[in-house]
Image (cartoon, rainbow, N blue to C red; front, side, top):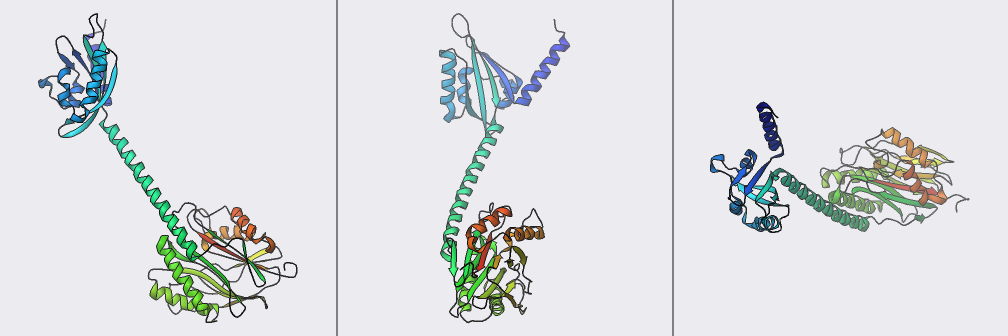
Length: 390
């Protein structure tokens, strides 16, 4: 037989457990109409103990009107069918809606249920968290759909401005392959661009660059810069002059913008590449299976400063040589040093061959670890045809 102290301790533990679970028990005598509630049920309903528990027949008056049908079905299941059942409904406590879960069980007697035992739990916090999670999922889904739609628009715009070539471009005495590689994780596309086109004087214009930023603003600025270059190229001026003019354009017409670029003219008959750079890494020369970066002439970012001269460079080429031009997204990654990225690109580029440039660029991307997660990249590979390649 339990001592009085043991009973008090057990009752205290039971009350503590009810508070922790925000639940309590109730019992209704169907013959007398009397009800018995634990302290926690009074707390859940916000009802003072002096007011006494609510009779089962009067419970509907405390339930939100929209949920009274759920309570009616619960009582019908328990009182008429004599089966345990549960339901959720809302009450208003102190002007605040509270979500309750009620489990009722009829206590059978020869003439039908004489009493109903119930467990009442306040699940407001749980339902609120579920609603917050549901709303968060909805907002996330909407954001993803919007991002996918914006990306589709940006891709269409990029393709209209900068069509992606299929396979290699065969220009005079050269074979050219291009790749635009969007970032893996960034929803917005960047401002990377390229140009490879024959000029009226017989030379080939080769250019590659990257406008700062992402999304439609970067793509719009990229279009302005690239179209300006195409127009300025018709003047026949050398690459360093073209960069000077583009720098003036960025500073005075494309505010809060910077860009990198490499611009060059390839004289296919003399096999000379005359070029200049603005902040971009120098092209890589692949000769006889060995890859090395060309010596970098001086040249600041477009949009960084006025009056800074762009130094010209001149590279003599041979039949079978390859040039690889690329934007910084190819070598720069948060997870590794830029020199490490450049070493990987040099090693991969040494395997490029003029007769297999298109597939060769895919292998280069695989060998350096795939697309950059955070930044776009553009690659332009130029093979100089020799006697064995023609």
